[in-house]
Length: 125
Image (cartoon, rainbow, N blue to C red; front, side):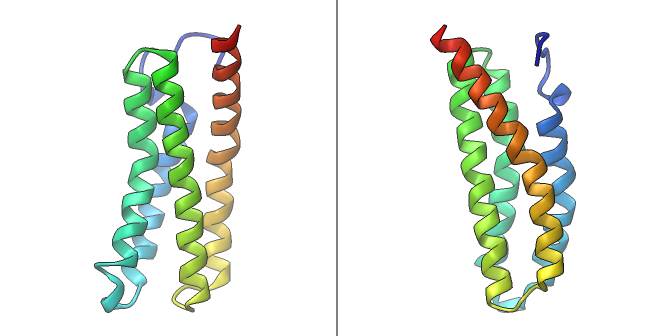
């Protein structure tokens, strides 16, 4: 992130998080009916939290605020990973499906963590 980002839509991590949403929503729809207001809802909320926190943090215009919201987004990714493992353990979703989603989550988590580290270093300097 060498040059200044003017809009959160320019952030690849935000774009990847947005690309993840349709797949997560499709998975949530496949859960048993009795889980639609519990587990499925929690999965959707965690998934939505990732791009919305990235966007809100970037829009605040202050590095410390941006870091705080990126940390929240990273926490939501960890929550989402855990919820997907729960669906697998409860045998609602096949391992193959959660493994594909986990790869997509990692494609967000790794650059997100790198961005957080870079921004934290710049604040300390």
